[in-house]
Image 1 (cartoon, rainbow, N blue to C red):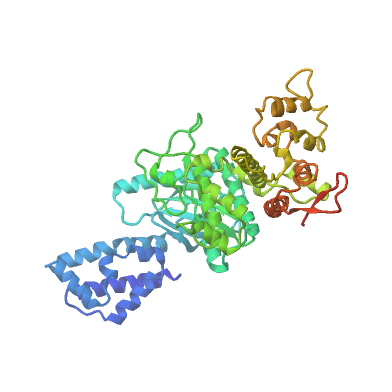
Image 2 (image 1 turned 180 degrees about the vertical axis):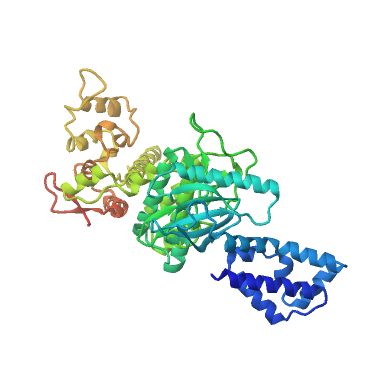
Length: 534
């Protein structure tokens, strides 16, 4: 940007308005032309007072000044005072470009690349290092002296927080100090777009494509949280994608340290959070809250934005996500677990989400060795258990109801839901006689008989929660064999709705690439098998 040309326009604007306020001349076309040049620099545009920008013509401006001030001297003083911040800003840029801290010959002053209420971020090129840097200079717009002092403290607080963080997913800070009396932060220059700009340009993405930025976001937050730092202001405008396809978290302006032995409280009583559609509602209600689950809420909101192109707001938000076709029901549930209103219902850490969307390296290596690239996620596994337990309990309720009304016993989904046939079913999968038991002199089979037949104190669905059966482990083979065996005629009822149950289970499994299907005629143990997609 040609700042000298902008300064000329600002000088002409000031002279013209002073003339017009004292019954002189300033043509409307000149007024609009000068204003257009000045407003071309967004930071400068925000510095222009409303008593100038609110007028469409110079005559409107003159009448407003006359209505406000009777004397010429008061009008002139008001105009001079209103334009002073803009003149000071341009003076600092033009005269201060070569006064940057350190070796002034080494830096080449660049263009503004971001701005806000705190100040402006500029791009600088270091000639000796042959590197670009981003320089954030604190110069707030129209604040009191007290607010300026507090804002400066927060500005340096951000610098100190970022300086402690050294992770490839978080923008790096290299130096802090003052230039021309103003605080600055020298940090890594990120060449790319914010996620908001990227989605505006390219449109929403699929769940699979969203995993890369979300993985980077979660990885960066995992590191920050371990360092005791919560971001608390995550949104699509402070998460960037670089030109080479990497991702960076920026702007830790309202971050807080977690309360522990090593960190003091930095969030003061009375401090407010601006809030918005990406901010945890609990944080808005309680600005002093320091909880990593606030960041997890924001992760869910950003994730939703990647898939839909807008924030998760309104009663139809979930429906709108599904209508995009960018996420399945189960994938939608992952996002909405992040967005739960109660933090206890959210994921409790970023690592927990990462383990779901990206299986651990060890699991992937084992899958590769066995030519099995898929993995049943924890979410799918939980849905399968909930579905089967609900069906079992439903059958149990119908059975009790029908006995009381002396009607025919209902069609059961599986015989193993009854007490007598758990052993028949489980003996096809395990050697119950050699498995560990809680009672001496008793086999696991004896234990099952005692609790399911004699005492009747094993709740329906107990098999899913018994650690010895391993269904809740990460071993997919065990669960898949279990599901396949459920459809053997020795296990299921011939009158049951087993075909519908198989279809329902396949709906749950297909997200992770599996399908239960009949591989051959019913004979022996090879009734059903499973396959997977690559």
